[in-house]
Length: 100
Image (cartoon, rainbow, N blue to C red):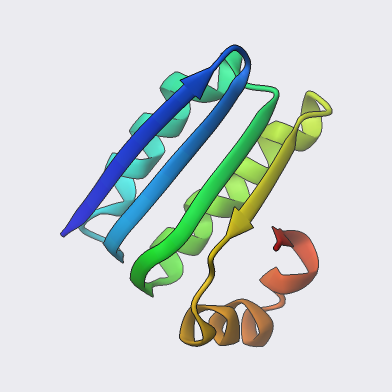
């Protein structure tokens, strides 16, 4: 189960993710990002309530980061729990993503 709360202001978007980002829920996040990213210059993903991320979730984040890079936008992750940060570090995503 994944709950996505959106806050939009001009060309800035904040997505608060709660629950699990896995094979079952990654398409929902991908669909949300596909709608938002064309109009977004600054994307913030709040992972404070995210409990789990799988390779499917990592793939969605990588795709979003590439899209933002192509248009010189910014994407950052905030509130990342220790367990998820460890996944980012082990997979090398800590070097690709901006984590605050």
